[in-house]
Length: 522
Image (cartoon, rainbow, N blue to C red; front, side):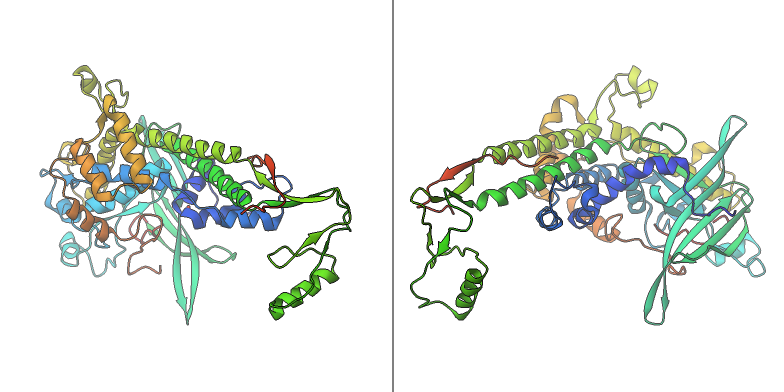
């Protein structure tokens, strides 16, 4: 029996539920509604119609997406810098690091965002597939602008990765990367799934359309002799390709808020429409009496006739309800409002908790175990986000080391330093003020300009931060990560709400992967 090349590793399956929650929130209200009962359970005895109505009245307060975007921007308010000691060949990559026009800083910001949201992310350092009959020397490669480039492999695109320990070091032996490209057939678009398999000696590319069989469509020798994939963990891993995403608690709180907000919107709808009830009236005894249909439209007359024929009751300004029972009465049942107040307090509590969780990564503490021993001994404090940014710089440096290998450059590690901005954060004593600031921004109570100005005033952003320049950077990046995947041009590319009620007088009715180009190793 032939195994499926798209099979997922056990590590992937363990991380998948976390990524599903993250991606649903990143997709906004539309994605959360599409997930339906996955994140918004159906109430007991709730009909399909009632559930769908409640679902369509639910809107996502996306605190997670706002916090993720804000946190991920902090290390990139200044450009990522490759050390001057690095060879010119590597400096030439910085302006267009992915051969799609993205400079190192803007490209790295998107990679960092993916890793911060999902717990880990990957960088594949690839090389174009070339015809060695035409391109034989390094001089030929330079003349033809053939060079290594970086490919972002999102966390959920790496289906499987396996490694062995050799000489005390962990060495990758196989990775499988999922891709989706769009091919044009006449006037139709056809989505084509791909799986790229990279091993130390060779690489293969498989394709299939729909649910068809996988077909080997390309492959070749891996001339490096190793797999040039860098994995960045946004925290301490729990195992190989296993980690708890650092913002997972915020994700869970946001999902809790989604459910509570749905219940709150639903109970407000119920409370706004009092229910007509009757006492001392037999089911068949209420009747509607009219002495005339004068002044009624044809549609109203037709509706009244149907209601009478079906034994129904029409309620409106031109109707009168009567009963032959002298003790009978009609009245409205209204909501007491207690559950509404409780729901509002629950939403406020959840928003406060989300605000606290969103700033946890930027609070500088001297006891931060991720800081170096030297930093701890000298009394320096570092936030978790600062430590993540420093390690991300190390991952970028390793990617440049792999790029050097592609062009046969032997560069000492100390000459391949990559600096990522880390001069941000807030001391523990200032955390409460920053929490309020994050909450106000997420709620839309303050503008982005004011938010950035306050961050700069508190030294969370550098003193020379240029808000207008940063806006240009954001525009140049295009859509946020996860909303649009670019590909190289040469590639085909809870419980029921409280129903407590009170009677009102009957006389007064109530009112939420980029394809890796085929290259030497990939």
